[in-house]
Length: 520
Ligand code: C2E
Ligand code: CA
Ligand code: CA
Image 1 (tube, rainbow, N blue to C red):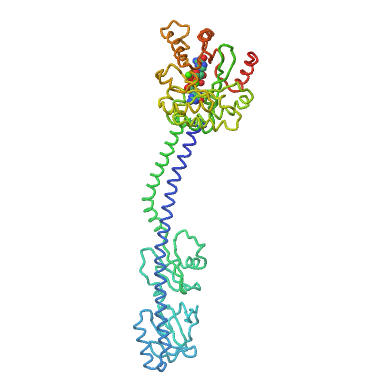
Image 2 (tube, rainbow, N blue to C red):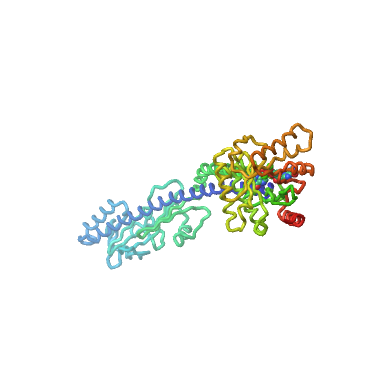
């Protein structure tokens, strides 16, 4: 993924994260406003139910009391009782007494002339009370009332008593029987809407009203309110949640920004390169100076970027060492060597590959374990893998001794890379279990020049000989340098004079050609 691609993806992510934060908070505010308003309506619907039930209970109690009377019907004593009960019961406005379906007397007194029939019921409650929802009072002929009858007695009441509840501003109430008949209302609700709600409460969605339905013991209560109240509450919730949403959006954008910055940082790119196996190995031939024979190669890393650019290790190895990523990189190099050269190494036991170990690999011996794991079951022999370590890897001399000693026991040859540039004393180098030194290119560059430091080169070579170690020279670019080194009894060399590091296919053909030219 190129930088511009990463930036575009990050912008898309940031926008999505911000939209999600603000969107989810405003959804939450909508949800809370809706459910809180709904809960408020529930409370009023519940109150309506309680009111309706207690009104019906009052009426029921009166009716049962009346039915238990044993006085002579429509006697003065009977009518006095009816009158007293009417006066003492809030829910009762009139009591009627019927005989053979005809009104005989009421709490107002006896009936003489009119032939008034017992009213037909709109519905009958479970305990047998017949309810007529709206009827003109039989005697007073006043406003329509509700009648409840049980056997010979009827009780009249104003329907408003069923919905007589104290409500907040804007709340309307509908009380209906469970058969769906509206008994009573409060604050003039739209009765058509109420009828639709009673018929199918789940599927009514009204543009202007919010409602809640409660049912219990024969009654349905509906509390309604104009949606304007919902919007007022929504506004309040928004004042709380939208700023939180904006804060979350800022945080989310911040996170995406940090991630992108990390992703676009050199280390971020290197981590991804390791993950995506963008690192490849090139191989630089190592040549025996006396014969010109290629005895092996040094594996040198290259970072092949998706855009085709190839980066040299100097640009990323120091960063990998600093960040601790080098361990993973060493593992990949070993894997690459096995993948690239397993067949060659198995078929030609005189071929060697040198691998560079970092200070970290040596310090904890982890590099060695990784090498053993990678070579297991490949047929490659340990002695075919040479290990190179710079003097920086020997800072902790005890662990270096351990790791290098172990490496040699396993059969690897170990050499000191960049020999001559470090500060290790001869005596400390002498303590280390080593096989060879690799004289640094800076000393090879001086060969044949008049510079004062050119005189150092023979000393470096002499030092290596003092240590009784094999000698490699690196960075050999001219025939003069090669001749000089051969005369100085330096055994092996590596450099552009022979070949630069090259991709594996090129190295294989170089090696084959070299072997034809210099057979055993
Ligand atoms: P080094 O191990 O000292 O590798 C030798 C460097 O000198 C290589 O550079 C090689 O390409 C270059 N070189 C060889 N012959 C000549 C020559 O005749 N003239 C000139 N001018 N240069 C020559 P390269 O490949 O850029 O590697 C640089 C350094 O990166 C290496 O130095 C080594 O320290 C490190 N490195 C490379 N691959 C790895 C690896 O797999 N692991 C670790 N830990 N370090 C690596
Ligand atoms: Ca090296
Ligand atoms: Ca070197």
